[in-house]
Image (cartoon, rainbow, N blue to C red; front, side, top):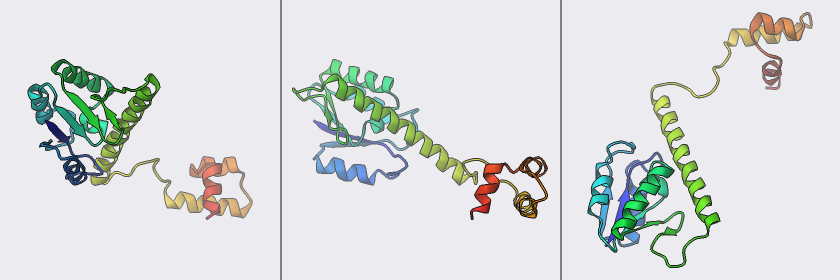
Length: 180
């Protein structure tokens, strides 16, 4: 049986892209998590308990299936023990194929997978912070300090060290504002 598994992520929060892709592969069953959290993935757990020999689980990308390299290995071991397979569409990994992969290809895909996991977690964290009104990056210097630093610089009566000590604006920051 072809089983399509999906869960929301930042770029596909309603799983619409995943549904389209998995339907195009004519999955007999679609399983969708209600959240993107790594914890309490009830549908994944039930699916792994119920898979049978010959079943193939399809996912759009590896990071949708597993939350870490270790988690991926655990899922692969469970599937192997039950005679089931995984197919990751984006990476083109099909554990049922006879040809197999070279070690270099597997390592490359695992690195890409781990990078995707980290990237997705970062995007999720930035999105949460943005929703709370927190801006990412280094805090901006107060405008009055910048204006004062520019005035001091343009007066040619102060050294860069004096400007930095009085306003807190470094030489590189001052030059960046002067270029605008």
